[in-house]
Length: 328
View (cartoon, one colour):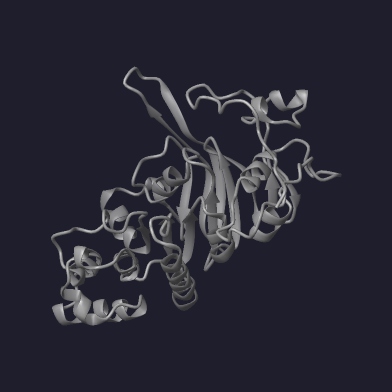
């Protein structure tokens, strides 16, 4: 059963002269209960904007958003405020997302004061200590200020604040990108354990394919605010069927310096301006395997396997895409 359903989501920002910058373009996806969907793509592909649209931190121009059966876009201020306890976010920079003047215990307790005002002071404190234990923080840390903690500990505070109301959905906006590798691994293991323990669904936003492989069940690949390919992680990573996905994967470098790249698949040319997108395939001007019909709209997502959709008109491919071997 799907906890989240998004259909036709679009968002354009406007420059001072009124010119639209198309950030998200007709995006649709679903997230099941207890499932993790990862959004990957290069900077500017619309990943974080989608996360903020999903939570209505910014307003979409078009599309529908349903969370737990409720039409989020139709909710007024107070109903939306009440619903926010079921959908929370963990930000990329832990220290910048925490109030530097508040103590850790108060930071974690703040959502309870807003969403569960019926709790007594003692009940809130008990919930705070319970949540701190769940994320691996000692209760003595409740009296600390964020600046007295390491980056990994600060991110644990951010996670504790997000889960203290027991939400059904967490948007994880590159939650490990500012941490070193050893701490990244700890945070990823924590998120995996919390999902199993609390049954939450995740929208996991990242550019790091190694973390996506670890935490996600399915992955959606974004380019210029549009989904290029979406399906089970193993299927998309092991046998990508879209040229942009191939190019993205071939650019990935393993953290292990002894591991080389399996192949190189390069795009050519410049990324189109988000103020003037191509009429047909957004990748047309850069794709080395394009066909004439790729320039003719529409170019919709098409199913090629159960649960696996792709926007390339040549998919499914009868032969592997041409690749160039790279010396190890």
